[in-house]
Image (cartoon, rainbow, N blue to C red):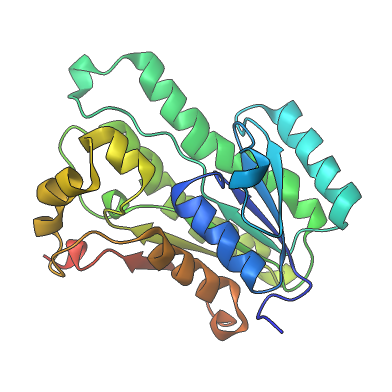
Length: 243
């Protein structure tokens, strides 16, 4: 029997990277997992035990339809992981297209609001929400004003929502990853090796993290071992913010 036997888990941005690792972890531990992404992955690329859904988290009507499908198939949501995110290119604010700003806010902040608000009627006492923040929510990062702003908002959202939902027995926490070796990192730098050459030295542990490192942290926060944790942020950053 797994830690999450019989639990219903919904993960946004679940088709790749951290989200895919999170889906695989919960499914392996016995949860019924609803994997949500802008485009549902092909069946062969969906972790075993996961049901894939295509949904734009910025579209409230699409989110409402998603939750109706989850309610019809599973009846409830026990664990919500808000992982979907947009990353803007590295540039100064004067060169940042306002449309890039709007898109980043829409996905990273409003999308989290949309999904959480729609999921809460399906959650009961013992429910758990984990939001993905970032080290950039804790320290400044040159040329990343849009992304950093959205992730700082996630910390405030997490703390305030934790207070609102504590009387209902629903916990809300966040995880702040450092540089993680994902497909997105490869797209940005070309190869994992190139990403490591640029970023590993910024982390005192001397290497990039893996998606599974973040999935393990999220699994802990969703587990009974974290039953007295709410409104907290867990840094999983190889010492990046300790510098």
